[in-house]
Length: 167
Length: 118
Length: 344
Image 1 (tube, chains in turn blue, brown, yellow):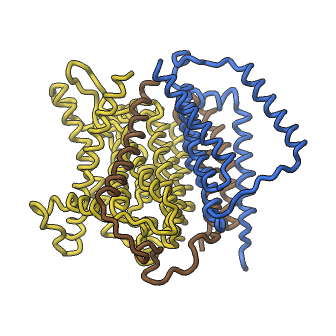
Image 2 (image 1 turned 30 degrees about the vertical axis):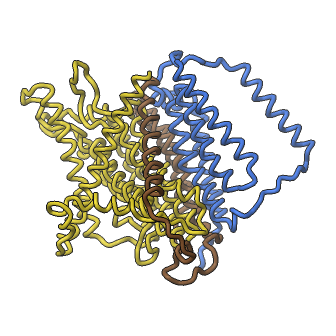
Image 3 (image 1 turned 120 degrees about the vertical axis):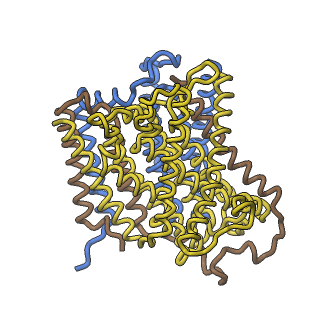
């Protein structure tokens, strides 16, 4: 139990510390690397919440895919190391509105969720098969819609690449 | 249960620790004879021309984007695959539809020439 | 809990030692076999038959200067080999090297971490390993390194896809992500005589997986990241001393893990056909099975080595074509066909 708490604080610390580097760093390369650790910390938290399949998905997709894309973006843009990002304050009022709405939603979710604080509360055993069953029975429609979203993204990606064949 | 993850954590930490120790050992035992020339960027013996920080082909981004999209599909397939036997024909048809929709996208991307590498 | 950590650490040290020793043997084998294929002698001076050559190389690398170019980004330049070796060493955690074994009165499974996402752990650690190469290429601030690193990461993620897809057929048959249960499932016999190994049930998946494994370990014919004629050393052009050594080590450790995963998924893991009918004691049988596992891994490793010294290298466009236009459709088709057969 002590170890469980230690692990929780360890991963929380990683997540929060690196996330603040992402936000506050003036160097975009540092931000990108810090994001890597944020994803990693979140994966650790998922494991502690007994959602091991979700944790693996987090690593496979966010660290293995999205982060690679971000790094490509950061690395391959001209002179990223020397550039200092200037974050000026514009559009203060709309931003405050949106942030307030977001914070409200998050706090709402925070209060309404039935948090499982003990690691023995639920079983670990069959996360992946359970998710599979749920996806193909109760959540069939969202699942199929997900494939359409992916299709749209694929088409979008092909459009962005803009590689018209030269006749 | 959660105990199963302790060895994983130890493995990850141990692997990283091994790497750090090795790098530090090398710094400790390796000689240090700094000269100006030695620390220039290697360019087959020529004077380095410009920096390596240049803009790059979009093709690499394209591969990464396609990878993410298909990777998400694959991640959906894992839970389906492990329950496959319990789901019967219905499960197969649902997934066939899912895969088919993606194959349409795949075909489009192919015809659009995004998979060409020239 | 504290006990758990102690036991895991001990296991880690054992596995690390075994991997490092295997790497030393593997490097020696590679050099001797390549020499044999090219009609040379190969290393034969250090120790009997040159057996200690690899150890001498490690000591040499340790005593070399660690050169970090002036323009390189030092923190990341240091971090990259650590990520590579860390990922390479920790992949082995979920691979069962044998069945359960009775030791000091307790039964234990011959694997380090018994988690129920087994195979996905391997895939995800592999995907972390991509960073070692990408960051090495980028942080060196060298054109060869950057090109090598970029090419490599694009190659790795492309083939990771085929790898992930070829596993699905196996998962559908065995209905679990746990590697020990996947092996357990392969210990039956089809028609009473043919071992129920996945290579017989999933031949297409086996081929796509092996090809993807070659690409993931950067072995010829897929070793474009370090294509010497065009990229000098590829992503590790600017690395010297043990930092270079770590990349080298990681490459061979990855090879061993890849061979172990291929064995586990497709070749019945530790299963030694018909051995369970011989009436051996449980302990002897377990020991035999561990040996069987090692033998299978060795055969695959020899295959890796012989392939490297036999085939020429692909061009980069060919490599991407194979990944996206051959492997990917083939793997998807395999999933659909497997599903169809299982349903009918």
